[in-house]
Length: 161
Image (cartoon, rainbow, N blue to C red; front, side):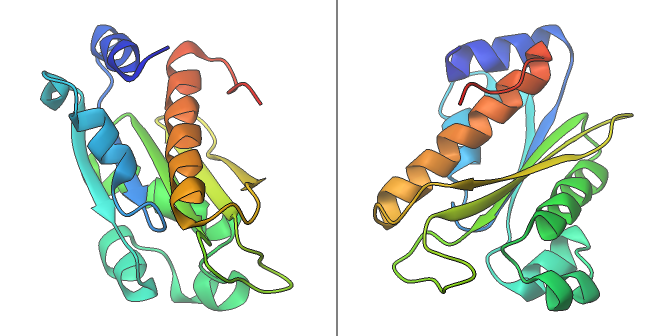
């Protein structure tokens, strides 16, 4: 499904969307709002690059950040929940990861954690290892995966691998 198709399905289902992005810096929101008429589906996008922004804008708990680090499914969960609740939408996706260059033995370059929050459903999280393919490529792959998560939520299908 194209981004236009994703928006059309959301419009048909009267589903409003919010994004909570860290390493992608707003690329998912930009992809959604590139399509004319997206304003009736897209509520807002939170770009929370720093831990302080994650706490202040999305309500991510400092204890979660300290215990698991910003690049974790636990933080992705709280980011998605925060976007869902603070924006008052039906669907929210979050992204936090290490686009590179660099990383560590425990959190390598290309590791990205995602959260998907929907009203009246449990939050779903996952980690994808995109590999050290370069900053731009990791960010683009993360954007595309987040769009696939949104599409899957609107069709009740998991994203294709």
